[in-house]
Length: 199
Image (cartoon, rainbow, N blue to C red; front, side):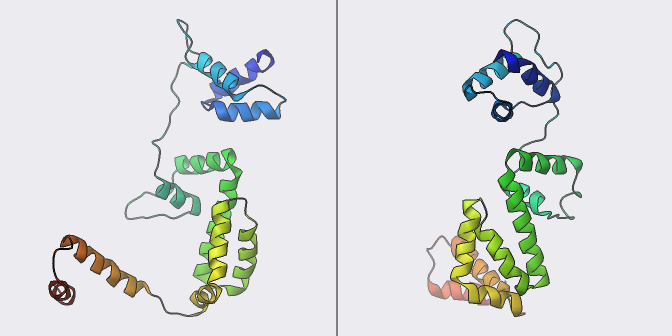
């Protein structure tokens, strides 16, 4: 560990608090030891017993966002009514995430491209995108490619045809809400009245 101690101290001073990431960086520099050894060293440097910590000032962090919000940041969604435009923190978070896990960057690229294809309704480019999706390192994306291939005529129709089942889905959602409000105790007649009556 001694030959790498200076590097570990330098990374901690730079703001890195993740032993896993430091261990991966050390492996690229020739370190053959275990992850546990690196974790112990990082912990001792951050919280030494009876001594001054290596880092005196706390690093500014942001609260952990939800998975849904992170997905929105990754694909570039923005709700102007609720959120401010993308901040530098969001950009930094996305870049750090893609650096720590390169597969996230690949998935981000595929997701953004898919949204663009849907907006442009480009079937020709969809086939090329589907081939890339099948070769993705993320197992979830390969499963998504399989599900698209299983119902390929319907997917192609979604690109070509102007119709949408959004209205049907809205009514189904409303029906489920009404059923939940009655806790399953009301009969079909009452449900029919509540569905058909505007109020």
